[in-house]
Amino acid sequence: MKYLEEFQNPELARGLLDDIRATVTRPWALMEVCGGQTHTIIRHGIDQLLPDEVELIHGPGCPVCVTPLEVIDKALEIASRPGVIFCSFGDMLRVPGTDRDLFRVRGEGGDVRIVYSPLDALRIARENPTREVVFFGIGFETTAPPNAMTVHQARRLGIRNFSLLVSHVRVPPAIEAIMTSPDCRVQGFLAAGHVCSVMGVDEYPELAARHKVPIVVTGFEPLDILEGIRRTVHQLERGEHTVENAYPRAVRPEGNPAAKAMLADVFEVTDRAWRGIGVIPQSGWRLSARYREYDAEHRFEVSGINTREPAECRSGEVLQGLLKPNQCEAFGTTCTPRSPLGATMVSSEGACAAYYLYRRLGMPAAPLEASPVA
Image (cartoon, rainbow, N blue to C red; front, side, top):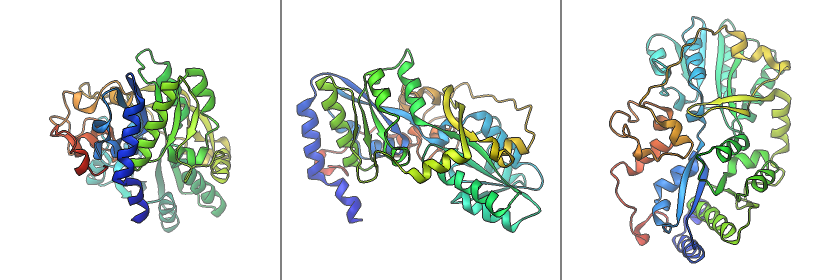
């Protein structure tokens, strides 16, 4: 705990806030890319402690939230089939599909199991050789390497009754899509530190230069967030737009070469649909041709899916930073964690879930001395 407490030090937080206040001279809009960063910001009231000139916009960095409805519906269809054991992390089970979720499928007799690692699913496949075991592989550059390694292991061990339903996405194309949107107000990015711990920072300098936005690689503790904001504001005030690494204790410039090699061996880059946003070119991964036999969409014929997004759900606008969760008419009324309209309310990294958990009563942040941050 001592290690974490050092990154929640009140005196250091106060110093960073004072520096930001002394630096800023005009309005700036910054986007934190990752949902984990959003939860830290809302939980500790960081957005309310900042000067009025600094606005934080919540980005699309929640893996559960951006998994498209069509893939959710395919998961529901596969999980309903006799002889299938469908494995997933727990937060996917309550994500609504068109007319039900994985909890409902399990209640109707489907064998849906919560696992804590893709290797758990592979173990289940070894223990049940007469059944088909499918793992729901979603997420960003952080979760893709272990899923790739599991498929690699399945082939090495000769396990044929295992497959992966893939919906992996990549952050840099999402930043590109945000910056080219006609509604974009983002002037600087707090890049997700865990993504860069895998991929390094090589993909960002060209983006920063072309769109003239500073990109600061940022961690997830309160002091990490404040330091990322401080560096971004300094760049904006100086008219600079470079890439900085404010998370050096976890991120090396080259990333994790072993993880990147595993990704290159098992996956190939493809266009991907993002829930609430649409198709972003080159924004995802799929299993490469060499591993196609482990692709659940290839193994199971899943066609005729008729997806229908609820008309009153505005999670797509939330994911693009166009709407704050509590500005949605359904927030906290017809949309709650127990009865969500969209994934942003039910995911543990969803922006709507953060607002509901920490700020649903609309109470202001605690005074600086009593705040969990400062």
